[in-house]
Image (cartoon, rainbow, N blue to C red):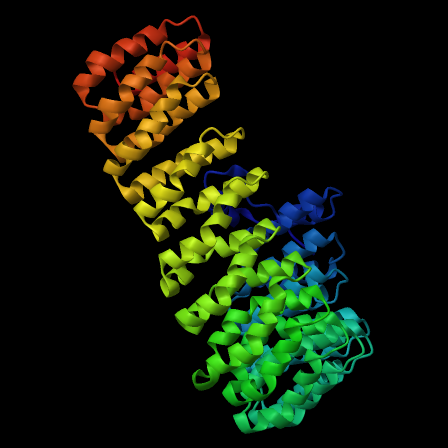
Length: 604
């Protein structure tokens, strides 16, 4: 029954194909052959060309021939089905626009029941997308019956898919149909299969948002309570997330009776995964329930989560410490933090688990702005110091990268006396990755500490890195120098950095001599013409006579790099002779780079 596409398609084919002739249009017969081919890649490619084929067939034949064919032949590898489910979500115009969009429902309905989750999810996503293109009448006549069929399907796969479709059709149907949809959702929330209850729990918050408030109170709360005490922890933890959404919908006076008992119970659930979910959603929950419930209920719950027996839960709660404290009601913020939260935080600083300590270190500095100078110096500084000396590098780095907010509160002197020794220790750490991370923070630290302080305490460190035995460190140290000069200016560079860098040109180790060249490359631009010509260039020329070929060819590369900074007179009279000498070197590589530099700088 499928005829070959007639001659009228040719112009379209050439338009669609453009410059690429592989995409030229196939007759539908060829599509059928391809979809029956044994090679998965071929089948996948032909599915990806579906829109082209539909365009060629025109809207009517797409509806009467292509879609029925696709609906009947849905037995394939998952990746082919996934591509099909995705394509169909963009097919509205190809079947004739919104009034015919319901023609896309049969193939998507089949795809929403397959075994592979990824395919089902994509089919549901496409169904949700095209649901918005249905008119209210079509929703009731075509879409809602599909949702009902899926919701009462024999296989759990179809019932899980149905859960994601209730919220998109509910707002636009009549009140009788709304009642049916609510009933179906209730049924799925108590389904025998945990996978279905899990799907229902994950969509409960989204469904609650489209319901009228009276039904949220009468229907959703009881479903929430049931799911939150499900025998499967994977269902209970999803109910927690829904609880947060539901709390935002209810008026303040109903929260205490309707939602809080269930959430309190979740915070003490026997499964750590559920408690973890409560900790993870804690800030959202805090915003949803408001200041009173936060003071009476959430503060003790948060303390318990920070002291939880499972490290994952403590880490999730530790992550929320700063946000939780920021959102506390202002009148009692400091008291609550000092009496309830800080004691727990002090214990976490010496936690046995490094993930917990690391999570805390990433937020703890933020408490200083909330607690002010005196509290920070008295209570927080000792904690920061303990964390800076922690054996876990991540903890130390999280502290260093957040120093600026403490600096604002307590000032640089106080900070340097207490924290600097720990930073110096890290800079000399045996693990090169730790050293590397500290180098990356150096410009940030320098900016925070100011130039005198930097010269006094940190300058020698930055120089020591230039002769590190790991190349990645030497490279990062070179880049670091450039950033420091950008911060502190060329004059500072001339007095403190340049002499030390140039001193390395006489180092017996050729790797260090090469580092001098790399530094000159990086510094020439930020230091400017005068310093480069006066101080750096003579050293580069001297090194062109080095015994090691690697140094000589790096001289050629350096001259190419710093050439643009120099004036043309200097290029012609000084740089050109040196490059010409290198261009006739015995070493192949030296010759090559010297010639390249000559042509790039147009000195030929």
